[in-house]
Length: 250
Image (tube, rainbow, N blue to C red; front, top):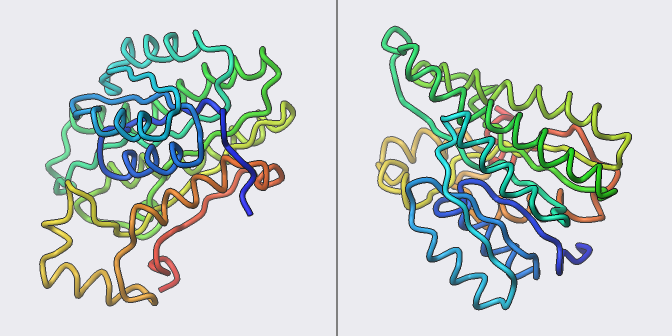
């Protein structure tokens, strides 16, 4: 049984859609107070989940590809004295041939997927330490970091950096009782990718590779997030957990 997250204040980046929105929904059901980051999406559904659950909800917009906006977001979040958890879910995946990757697309990919994760974690956990909060950080890496992809080289490299950062940050923050773990989601239909994943050839290839022979569900990812945020995971840190139907087992 999971220990209660009721009343815990938790930050979720990329909270307006996809896996992030599913995580917000689940955390609201757990009674957590939400700080939601979004960029260009509509945050109203996340707010509706919070209102239905009767939990506190704050939302802040920021373009995580821009250093100034990342630091400004961190400043707004650290104005709260009781932040307990950080879920670094926001990310971007640009499908580009290796020879077509430009310095601009490389920087965008690394700024959002890695640089923002580093500095949000740094600033927010520093406040946890000041307030003597034995907090939780949950990062999102990717199975692409381990499986490889010819059209996602910069994305996979950035997510590989997230996995490495997870190990390093766990070492740095363990002395303060703060855990740092990462989730590697497998193919999971959401609003932005469902059309692609529904293609017959795509489904045959991806599901055929997984021992479970089916796509995931955002709720499965949210379950892993809840575990890492909870007291039951107090002795689990520096871990990268594939939630992928066995995709990486092949």
